[in-house]
Length: 374
Ligand SMILES: Nc1ncnc2c1ncn2[C@@H]1O[C@H](COP(=O)(O)OP(=O)(O)OP(=O)(O)O)[C@@H](O)[C@H]1O
Ligand SMILES: [Mg+2]
Image 1 (cartoon, rainbow, N blue to C red):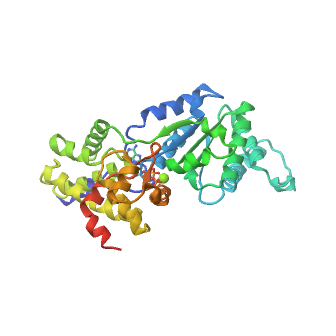
Image 2 (image 1 turned 30 degrees about the vertical axis):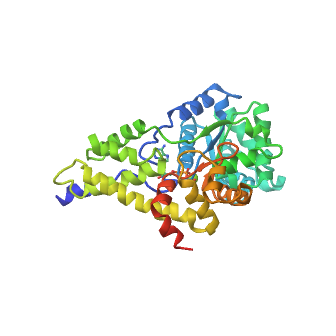
Image 3 (image 1 turned 30 degrees about the horizontal axis):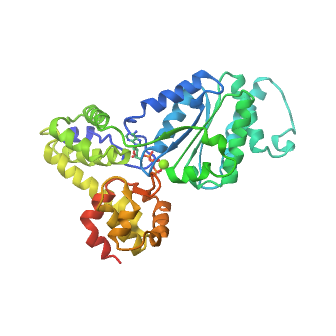
């Protein structure tokens, strides 16, 4: 019986950036991207912006789009805006280009002693992108550049990259550019000066995944891993994810782990397995996501959130002020701080909503405990 346990492997991947067993609910954006590659220069799918809250699946989607581009023979450069994206792109392309050039020279039997690339000086970003995109286009392929966490990038760097991409499209090269980041940060960035080109990018906001898709996918993922999930246990498990990518993996992982312990006796996930798994997953989510999001906030911001949690959906900021018996204007700075911290966002003027799933429920349930930390 020990062997059975060992061969059943938990298929869920509750880790940031980890490739999920199935990318649920992204068929349309994947089709758009594929169309973009096939349709040629100027196709809208070649310029995309992916936005969403933390854990909504931006990085996983970028990875998938990169894999698709590679399957068409395209070269893919993935950078994350931790340092300079211009340096990162140049570095990546310099590194990945060396082999092909050496290979080409060797196969032509050309001996170019003493001639090195550095003798012509360092390439500019536009230079390196033009060289690689032209090479790839000549071979019937193309170049995909992806930038993750773009909200952290320097606006001047983004402007340089955007200008180079725009130039290459005009030159009829096969180039695609996909960037991803937190919704508010990305909107602030591209609404800034001279980034109109990026405003025209095909927008994909990673809202919650329909629960019916989550349910179908979880059932088949569990089945594929050797256990069964159906009926009420499936419904409860799918519902608990809120259609939020990270929770699909976290809840799936915990529910599966409970059932795996009795897999040698019974391979079906029971209602108790599901219940207990959801509880475990939520506890972990509170610690690893919700408490982290609240950790650096001052008391006034916490009070704001607790007053906000009394209402469902989009909340008028006036209601929050009334709940705190304060003039609305006195809360402007607090609201801005919460938006900047990506805890809430403003879907329209005078309205706010929670950016993180389960935060409202957590605030309602644990307000005393949270306030006692101050
Ligand atoms: N479409 C999807 N279906 C199911 N699971 C997904 C999907 N997309 C991502 N995931 C899973 O959700 C989790 C979060 O994904 P990912 O790291 O891509 O999110 P993110 O939006 O990049 O988050 P962050 O803003 O923190 O970087 C991972 O465990 C990943 O495996
Ligand atoms: Mg990410």
